[in-house]
Structures are given as C-alpha cells and as structure tokens.
Image: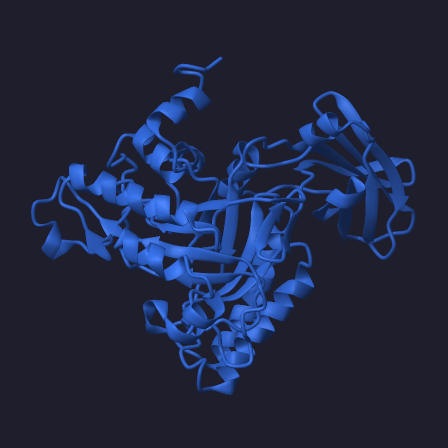
Length: 435
C-alpha cells in the first residue's frame, strides 16, 4: 500500500491485451481526475533496446482503446523470441505518456507480453500450439503471516520453487493472490489459474458480493500474461445443490458467461472438480492414490460412456444433465494429496492427507508412479498435483510449510516431468550428451 501524488489529470489505469495472431498489442488507457479536451496518449513498447512501437492518439471521454502493431521481424525464430511462455518469459517494456496539448501531465512505466491461450478441441493451446499443463495446487499461506507474504522475496521464492520442482504453473486455490506474486510469475515464467474464493453458503447476498469482487479481481489482474484460466467456482462450494436447485445452476452459468464477457481471451471454468455445466475445460478431482487404479480409470477406449456415465470420481457426476462433455480439454485439476511428515512421529493423529507415506523411501516411489500415470494418460491435457506446501493440518505438500523440501528438488522435478535423473542431467548439460 502506498500514497502517490498525481496531477489534476492522470493515468488511472491501463489494460493490455496480446493479439498473437496479428502481432499486435491491445492498449486501453483510462484517464482520471479532470477530464479535459485535447488529451492525447503516447505509447512506446520495447524489447530490450529495440523499439517495437511508438503510437500517439487522442482520448475520447478520458478513454482510449488502440491495437498497436508491433514491428515484425518477419522471421519465425525472431518472432518466437518475442513470445511469452514459461520456458521463455519475454516481457515487453512500455512507457505511456499522457499529454494535454503539448504539456506532459502524467507518465507511467509498464510492461506487457505477446502470448495467446486458447482451446482447440481437446487440447489447451499456448501460442498456437498444444501445451501440456503441469500445475501444482497452491493455497498461498505462510506460517508466520498466514495469507499475506512476509516479504516480496517470499513471493518471488514461491514462484522459483514451483519451477524448481518441475511445474510450469500453479492453481491458486481459494485465494486472489498478491499482485507482486503475479509480477514474479510474469517475469520468471509461471502459468497461473486464478480462482475465486467460495462463499460459505448460497444466498442472493453472497452471489451479489461474489459478482462484485470477482469483477474487481478480473479488472485488476487482466493484463498479467501469466494468468491463463479463470475459475469461478470450486467443487460446488457455495452452490451445493447443483443437481437439484436451478438457482445454483444459474449462478455458475451466470459467472461463467460474465467472466467470458469481461475477458474473451482466456478459458473459463464454471465449476472445477465435478458437476460441470458451462465450462471451457473439464476439471476432474480424483484422489485415488493407487496409480494402477488411476491408470485404469482414465485409459479407456470409450471415455464418454465409462467415465461420464458409469464412474464418478469423488462420488459426484462429472457433468450436469443437459451439459454433456463436448470434447473440451480434460485436466486432472486435483489429485495426489499424499501426506508425509518425517519430523512428526504422531503425524497420523495431528495431520491429514488423502493418503499417507511414513518414510521418504515410500514417498518418492508413490509420487513418481502417480506422476507417471498422469503424464502418460493421453486423455489429460494437463494435471494439478495437491499440493505445493503444507497448510495447517494438511501435510500433503511437496514442501513443508516453511518451504523446505521433503525430497531433494532434483528428485521432485524429475518425477514431476516424468523423466529419469539421467535424462534430467542431459537436459541441464550435466551428464553424457550435455553441452
């Protein structure tokens, strides 16, 4: 939180929209304060020292909405260098200057990125190509300060740790995260699913508040390239009677369509986990920790009949009546949840998980077998392991609550990506074949 003195007319907010297909950046500028005539905005965008765009245009009623064409190098390799991804998180620096006639009244420094996220049949697409999601569920708690990070460096470190464990993204669970976390995810390259915290119970007042707060969250975080999916509801929380109560179904469908209206550039999940209706991705929560049972459940010849009509992970139907699976990507958005606490001999009585390992020697093989199954199951366009770090009584994190790892990072990373240690060493140039 800070206080900043501004001029009588100032830049109130910016909104960046990457337009991957035409090599453009959408820029919306909103002025605040005294809205006068002859307001103009100048937008400059750089990649390193290379100026990609220099645009100048007039504001109407204090607003401007412009598609800015970037200077196109014309060569695929050069274009690819400008694309943002977890593997190459290229950010474009921007400077926005507000002028009244020839007088500069305000200017801000910002950044944006060129990237696209989309759905193509049963695959999630990043920058026009199928992309396998390797996410970890992250509730964003710290032992010393709960939901507020102790410092900016703690937020940065959490992004680094997720990548260090082999994940390319996180599903922020029941929390609208600090913008500084999103900044570090932008800068270091980590995909983020943003999820609205659920109401305790259903009521018109709860839905009214949820709509207001969710709208504010989308408006605040829209310009972050790291955010790739919006999740309105989770596991029917706050709308517990979706199979029976029309008002509950209306709420999910309304939030889905509202989100798609506020942001037409990202996929939206109406209700993650089960009982899906309006959704761009079908998220499934399944905590069966027997790898072979998990494999048998999802490596089926006729998934529509066997999975959607006969089997019910979590004891819930996957889609509501009237909303059959239309071929959307399927992502195992919660699984695993293996509790392991080597420092606590009474862990069985004081901590909780969906299953339990009592030694590192049993914990690693179970994690590796589970990750092998989800990596190799063609049905899945990605997965989200539960969870990033221990949270209160939940001891099913890959990290302890203080972020110390329960296994060596190199072992976690190799298992997450379903590669052997030898393959990992080659990738990193540490073994035979490395450069």
